[in-house]
Image 1 (cartoon, rainbow, N blue to C red):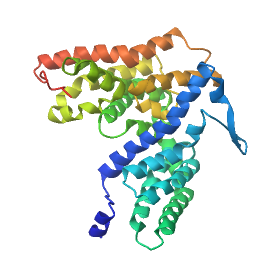
Image 2 (image 1 turned 120 degrees about the vertical axis):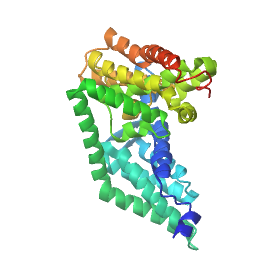
Image 3 (image 1 turned 60 degrees about the vertical axis):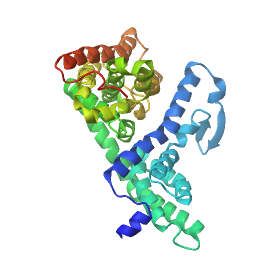
Image 4 (image 1 turned 180 degrees about the horizontal axis):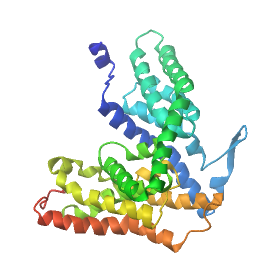
Length: 359
């Protein structure tokens, strides 16, 4: 069995499923749901009419250029997962149907259903790939059949479970905004810097609202924090690559000296409760935005999109000056200032030396 799994490149491990597959799923979400959300926001705010033109109608559902990427999110996630699992072509292409089925039947909690079902379907597809003389029939059939059957069987339950967990986190944040503001901000921020996907976690748990705002705060604190405290070593290139790219670039340095992580993490523990208690900052855009931070400015854009959604739903009258002040302070100013102050004390204590943050 070990030889068979090795020959089929089936690796049952936390890294393969919890890091590689989860991270790829976030990329699939980014290239579909998130891009569609961004296009839709641009269409509404800049009055770009052609983005809102109807290009297709299926049943009662109307699709525009901006909404088409969102409709393909299930397929995009599954294909991305299949790619991360190193699926052969026939399995990879079959993941389109698997992802669509899991996402559709999983409902609002579709991303979590896609993650589990796509992994299982992909591994079974890999197991039968090129084992018969009619591979072009057997491999897609097995992959799609397992994916669709599992979607019909467990996707609704997985979707409900994801929604339930997300609702508990959001409820707890509303009930205890200070404590949960710290916990959510720190945990999601740390996940952003680790080689796992905070964006996929937030998407799978539908982390929005006040908890989503805390998650945005934590992610921004990590990215902006590392960008500014390492400016001396990494200059403008490092500032941009970490501040608008990813703080994951610091993982090598964190492994060598974990104390370099103190400043951004403590900053997130401060900005989180400020976001929840002082500014009541909510992230009601696409859930994936809660775990993106300042990567491509997706986190702040998600907060802004949420404001528009709330106004359209009648839950918010208008965007206020306090809203903008909170967004700028939580996402940019406070992470930079707090990280620099905290890091100066860390350096004075001799815990971090020059060159420890060089990427």
